Length: 81
Image 1: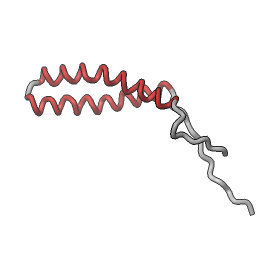
Image 2: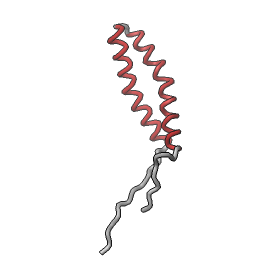
Image 3: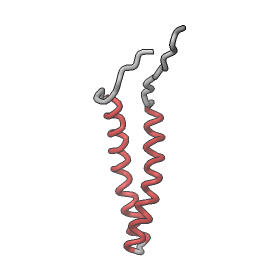
Image 4: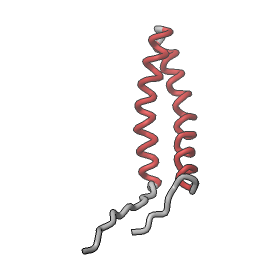
């Protein structure tokens, strides 16, 4: 009787998936940024300004970070089926 061995696949994120993940994450952070700044300052203009500037550059950095890590082989295993 043969034992069955589990098959594991490594799926690589597509460009589109990385974009969707980045946008979803950013929406959460936008809400948190606005809320936090507004709670401390009670100024809508300051909260909106911080939210916009902060999230433009951090979205770009997050996207690049994800794409770079997808290319790094460290910590990944090759699994044979």
